[in-house]
Length: 252
Image (cartoon, rainbow, N blue to C red):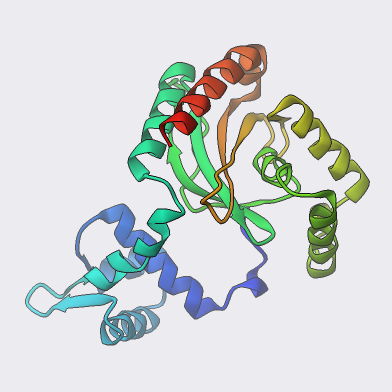
């Protein structure tokens, strides 16, 4: 679910859409390719790409009329490596859980009053739950969000709920604080969160909090797929995921 449109300055959002497009494509792109892939107006696309070149985030090959991110983009997040543990270890965690369950597995973290999917490994069953990396999901209306909140104090959760209720205009996104605190307490008690038909009708998700002392925010591992397949296999999925998380933490 996308965040409300007035929460993002259009030009800023487009910059990151361009960078994410390059991340998906993993190669040079022409202005026309960017325009068609993202649905931007031609004039706006050219102006945006030229600005990113001037700022040093894109390079431009005049012969091929192609753009490519520069090393400046690659170095932006290097300082986070001490906080965000090895990409390889997270990949191994995702792969292990996906192979054990056959379902779509995600790593996500809290992004202000939302959850954002950082890594996604699609399931191997014929019918899978397909979600894009980078997707924004409501914090209080999702299994992964309730899981992330379970690591916070009730006072912190209350402040977030109040802030969200002040900011949102959509009734369905407003938080019933009493209900939310009960749900979060249940997550704390059993060590994971289960949500059926919560964020998407017909989809079930089981989420696990992965704490880390050197991480600014905890991350959440989730396993998702059709409810009629996740529900009868809940205990088995929980056992596989918890075993994989314990192994991941020991390697830290």
